[in-house]
Length: 118
Image 1: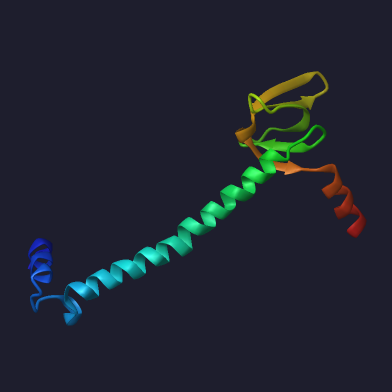
Image 2: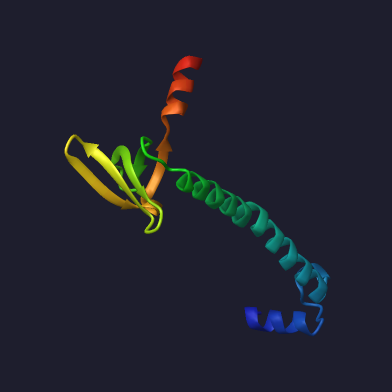
């Protein structure tokens, strides 16, 4: 029996359905799978996106940042109208990044608190 004939028999309430539950059993399994998918994949991803957006919105001058390309530097200017962050990577080298290109932010306050706690 191929897939299409099995689906046709399930839709007709035929006895060839695995488990013998028919259409209601199949719909219940799809609902359980959809709920599982939401709680295991979608919800944590949405939570992580919100957390990352809060971090990006809080970037300010003096923060140490790492770009998605692996470039480390210090924020010297933030342009909120164009979502551009100027990062100083060396003494005379400044790069402009899109705010979304920042992967990690390391604040001076966080570094001082970590050093004091050790």
